[in-house]
Length: 221
Image 1: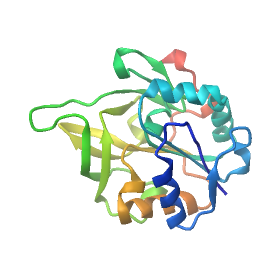
Image 2: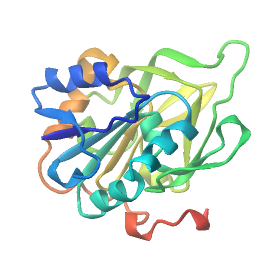
Image 3: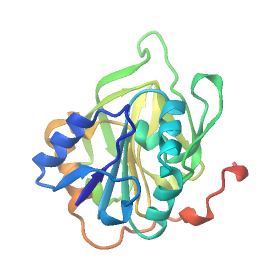
C-alpha cells in the first residue's frame, strides 16, 4: 500500500491519478500509521510555512522522521521536496523544514528572458545514478512550476539538475529519501516511468551518505 500525505494544500487528484496509472494500490495516508505503508509520497503546492504548519498539526514532523529512520522510502514532489530540507527563506522569513536532508531553499534567479515563476517543460539532466531514473534517459523533459529551489549542503545528494538562468538541483536522493522539483504526475510518460521506479524498486535504497535522519539537527545549519 502506498500512502499519499494530505496537507490540505496538495494537488492530490493528479498525484492519485498518476499513482493509479502505474498500478499501485494507494490511499490518503493515515498520519498516525505511516508504518503500514511501503512507500509514502509527500506532494505539495503553495507556501512553505503553511505546509509545515499542516505537517506539525498532524504531528507528521516526528512521524515522518521515524518512518524514514526505520527504512521507509519517502518521495517529495515540488514543495514536498523542499520540505525535506532544513529550512526555507520563502517570503523573506526563515521557516524550519523536516531536516531530513541538509540544506536550505531559496528563490531562483531571474532575468529578462527567464522570469519567475518557472513554469513549463524543461530538460532534466541526470547527474548521478539513482533507482528512480532507471527507466528515464539521461536528458528528458519534465514539467515545472515553482519559484524556489533547494540548496543542499552536500552536492552528493543531487541526482539531477535543470536550468533557469543557471543550473539548479531538481532531483535529490539521500538513501531512502527522494525528492523532485518538477511534477512527475504532469510529465506524461517520463513522469510515470519515474513514479513507477520509485514505487516498485525492491530492496534498500543505496546510501548517498551525508547523515542519517536521526542525526539531523537544524541547529547546526
